[in-house]
Length: 149
Image (cartoon, rainbow, N blue to C red; front, side, top):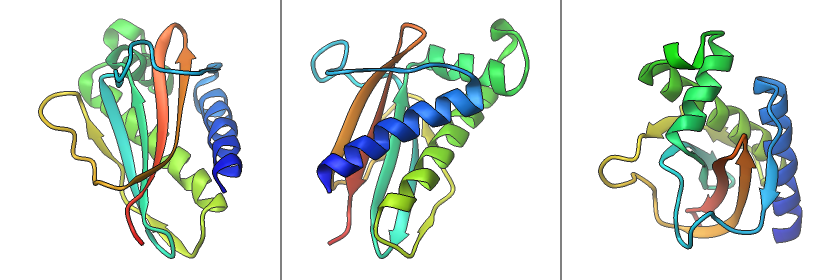
């Protein structure tokens, strides 16, 4: 399943960013700096036949750029709430698409956003896939974590 999941993650990320934002993402082999996660994360929990999370990490700048596109405002006019909403939407659509390749039936939670302050509210689990991308020179990664047995 690992190879199929990795392929599904890559295809989903490329499709979601192109469809929702009109942006191209390029996969890269590793994060910009060792063990560095980009600053913000949008997370959805999947529960049911498969238990886990899909986490979309990106820089704050990329979240603001996504907000500017989704809300049709200049980048300078995009605010924190819009950036968080954009990241929630990206996590929601990414997780929803990835549910199709995971055992079902399952349900998707409402997405949550972590803005890089405090401790990241992620559940512990088995990392099944993590892919790293560049989008307009900004870091982006998507992780699929299994939390249930």
